[in-house]
Image 1: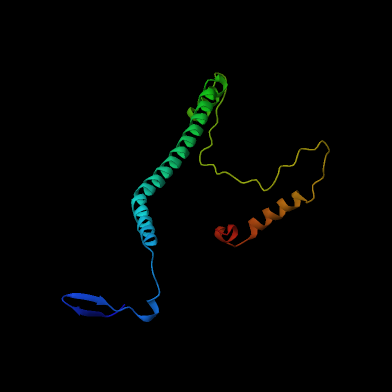
Image 2: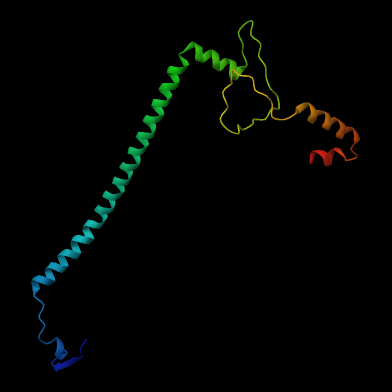
Length: 157
C-alpha cells in the first residue's frame, strides 16, 4: 500500500498514495460489513442444519407414500385371497391340484410362441384353399425320396 516513515520518538506514520488521500471510509460502513460477516458466519451452520432436515423430511415423505402404495396392494391381495374361486385357481396353477373328475395336462419343454398379429375371427362360410396342398405334399415326398443331400443341408441347422 504505502511506505512507513519514522517520525522520531518511536512513532511511525504511514504514507498514503495521492489517489487515496481523499477517500474516507465511515465507521458505520466498517461496522455494517463486520456485522454482516458475523451474521453469515453465525447463521451458516443453522442454515446447513435446516437444509439437511428439509431433505430428510422429503425422503421420509416419499417413503411414506411408497409404503401406503404397498399397503394398498397388500390389501387388494388379501381381498383377492378371501375369494374361494381365486384360491381354487391358484391351487390349480401353482400346485397342480384338480377337482375330482378333471384331467390336468402339463406341457414339458414347450416354448412360448409370439403371435404374428391379431387373430382372425372364424367365418361361417366355406373357403377354398389358395394353394394345391395335395400337389405340394406329393412333390415333397418325391423330393425326399430322390435327393442326395444330407439332413443338415435340408434343414439348414
